[in-house]
Length: 284
Ligand code: GUN
Image (cartoon, rainbow, N blue to C red):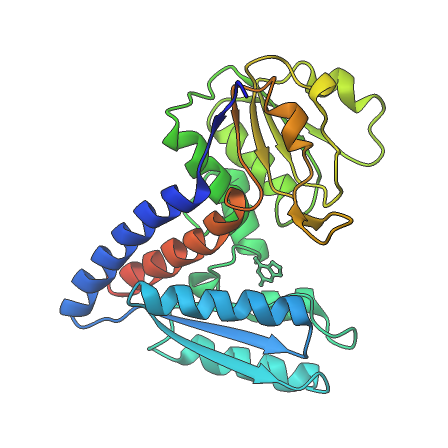
């Protein structure tokens, strides 16, 4: 193995300690940061995710409430709950777990969240703020990737970053964050011709497709930084990313493992955003 590992667990521990310290300081001044997590239906993966989010809050001294609703909840009832949480002074961040049942318009629900409490960074106002370089909440997964690059002291100025994937949650905001740090950014996606020709030019590659082995060793320039956002299962049911880790680790300069890479950073940045929302609400 030639690549150095970027340890998402270790970095998360460090950042969560800082969150806990800032949360305690804010609490001492009378504001306990609070996150509301709303889950509709019984998607098994979502149940695990929301449980982890609530536990992470508890571990860092943040207040959290988990609101669980039956899959039959109407869109109007969910919008009413979001409105109530917007008005609740004990709640600084609101997260409505996706996916929502098909009869609910997810975008409508996201737009109902006050941008001041949009700790997922999914609201159009948050996306617009990121695009224009204004203050706002950044989506947690790409934000976590930026923290990982920061942790290795990586200067993106003038570097070529290739993002594979164009989702609103990861690919697009990731590209904007890299651009903000003066990288030259290429976004590749399912219609891209000759993905390898692009990735071979890259100093930084972010794989965010949701498909195994999208990036293999022959597609990576020696020394490149590879961030793997994928969360897939292999034939044995083992968690794996979008990157062929065993091959790519012999070529890359840095690489994030799965599990233990980008995954833990997503929840960590949710804590950071919630704390930030509480600090802003408290005027500090
Ligand atoms: N579903 C999967 N990931 C996420 C996330 O980061 N936020 C929300 N709200 N739903 C998700």
